[in-house]
Image (cartoon, rainbow, N blue to C red; front, side, top):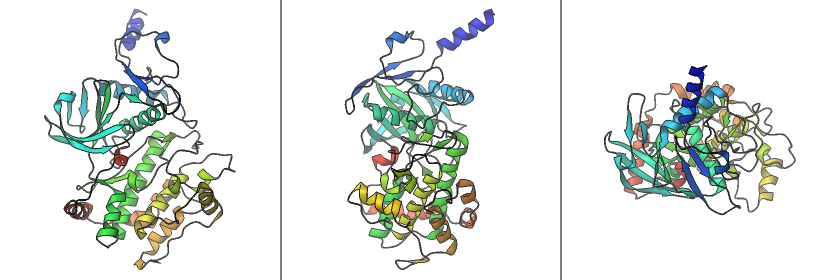
Length: 408
């Protein structure tokens, strides 16, 4: 009994840090207050509507109506990860073999590479390990919507370090009230990459590169579904990143939502042009599942293959509703704008763009599609191809980073 009490006491003394973000009216800013382990606090000390990491390590405020509680075992893993990572000094986990203690003073700033609603993204180097990384410097004042997106993004990346197709999380610390999130540095986003090829080089993305992009994105999405029970909800070219080593990785999980019985319900999350018909149809009462991300992948691949978005520009939400919900879905043909595509690729894209989601396949079926199977086995040197394009982009003075790339 005495031993149990000691364990309970120890657990109370090692509670994870909380992000105490007191909410205000929409659009207004609120202070980010930090409570570190060892600081006793009563429930009366916490403002109403605050977002914090309790003993479970999971935000007590729901991210959206589609979020479900995390199972106890998962919560315990999250607790340990967040407790170790988010302090004024923390542990930088660059690889399973390389883990080092660090503070902000151990990082040398190499310049800003992005700026957005949450703060800035800076390229930094960790002096002791000589590791170059992207550091999101999140302001100490963020509004309620941004708080939720930040917490969701951090939640996902901290739990995804064993997936090679998701941008890696290294660690996080607090610096003068701001939160610094250290991430793997990628070289560019896919939207900038493909537009440079089409608009400046007047060439196209080769189909085997489209295959490698498909395999990596599907792998990441399937990981989110199977391991974390999460749907991404914002699949598009700017959320797929590339680097000179040949890595292709999915990023930006700020609006991801956990699936409840494989269903999500929130309709206003994500980039509307890439949304599936079932997500924007106001007449639908039921939710949607991972097949909505399959549609977004199909739209993305068609855009990458042809060099242009498959729908004409909409002037209003009504136009989008009319065309996407009531009209025929986009279809890729073997000969499109002078480009020739294999039957396998055409079949894959058009399968993703089946309008009736009940007939649209899920990830398991898509991973068995002949285009995906052959793309996995293709010996293409992705690093060589990407490096060649990136060198040309640099020589043309193209900006390769965007704040979108790191959800800032």
